[in-house]
Image 1 (cartoon, rainbow, N blue to C red):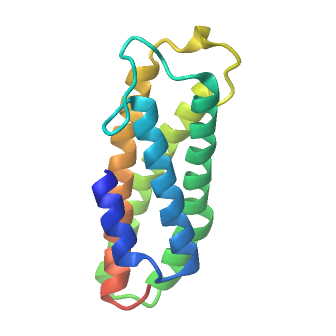
Image 2 (cartoon, rainbow, N blue to C red):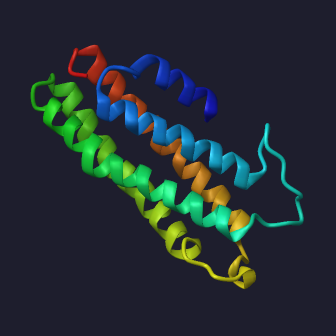
Length: 156
């Protein structure tokens, strides 16, 4: 996921200020995800769960990223797709519902862990974090497909 993010940042960075901000938020989210999950290059004791402040911070980044996509980037993509060839419009129509599915997973994760005051409610955290990671990977793939299509038609 981090490699894909670096490639996206190199490819589409500088194309638009909102896209730059969004890609930066995406990278920050991925780094925090890797820290929470204890994935290389970050390590975590397999028996210890992340600290609650770290989980809450991650949930804040997650909501910022999801919100930026829905309320800034995707609106711009929809607007740009109106001038795009039919195939790009169809891609957007195919991908947006799939992205919405990943949004639901992110919102559910945030609802479960974003406001915890004690760690008594962390049962299933690792499994939920893993499911969220899978959803984020899918989402970023869908987003990259849209950005690629817009780039091909010089709409980005």
